Length: 121
Image (tube, rainbow, N blue to C red):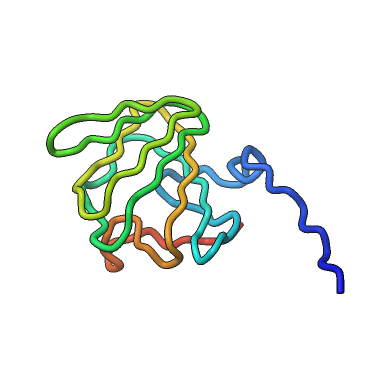
């Protein structure tokens, strides 16, 4: 039996479908992980993920990941992984576009009660 060819996913096209900030959109799945795009601007809240690392890849713009003991600056093409349990806060002075990968169901704030609801696009 042959599997149907699944079309490629164009991230710029997916990002053009929404304008909200800090609202991750699922574009695909990979080994139990959600692959998402998100537009960010301003400061996110301080949080940590006790069970998983936090993966950030900058597609466009610039962000900084504030940690309690330093700051990591990221631009287009830069990737950073916040280790699980490390408190952090992403900040974007201007709008930036990110690719995120995390285990399915992981709340973006580290707390399901305050997390953004993720939609598949």
